Length: 171
Image (tube, rainbow, N blue to C red):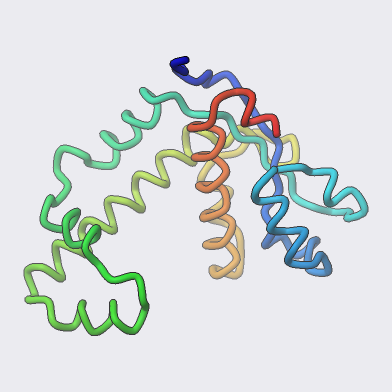
């Protein structure tokens, strides 16, 4: 049986496992949460920040890519990004051997990917702790390392609820 377009009307409350309020939660529980988005796993924890996100339709995701510069992105950078080694040391050696023009293309493509993610958060983030919010509020999180983790987790959850069918979103 075919599965058809996902609903972009679906909203979900999530927490980020990097939330300082969850510092005493074991990694196994956090991993389980990332798989299920089951907030009851953290029922004993108080003071967590609750993010409400909405699923993005195919059209929403496509518009995010266009706003991020899909028609101006570097194809060489896209290919290099795809070809990069997964091992960090191997990747560093590979990158150092690239000619300057390829390093620039790789960098520009990664900037494009970052803009796509920012556009997705702009479209998806509904509220933080019940108050209407957007990317500007995420950018206020300090320290920067924590902001970066929150941003990455939001993208993970947005992609998950945007790409799974409705039954899978609820489990």
